[in-house]
Image (tube, rainbow, N blue to C red; front, side):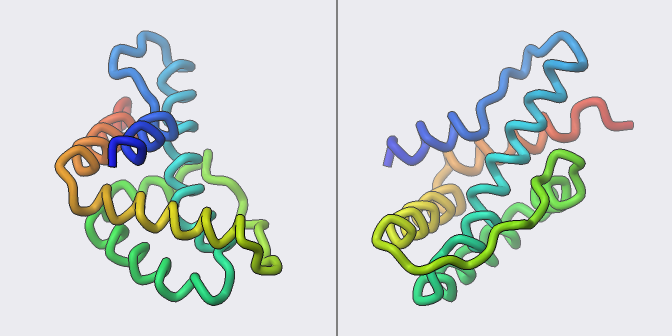
Length: 128
């Protein structure tokens, strides 16, 4: 399970002690892109036979962290949705299942919830 959190921390890596606006904006950019790739971006790449189960976990994730997902959805850093369904491959299936497990672990573990709390703090820093 620590592997999931290590990867998640890399995806959402940020330092609360950022001193310049550009550093804060870079952190927000990394967080938004990381969360997008783990959520809607992953769903877009999941093979059809995995997408229903992934979508169920994704729905739970969005319900658990609505503020973070709202900020990601409305962020100027959010990638354009240009990914198209591709042929199912073992690699895509593995990626889809791995990201689904990551989402589930974030939902159900204290460490995952703390990571999302930190992400929310970073994404809302500087807002008035």
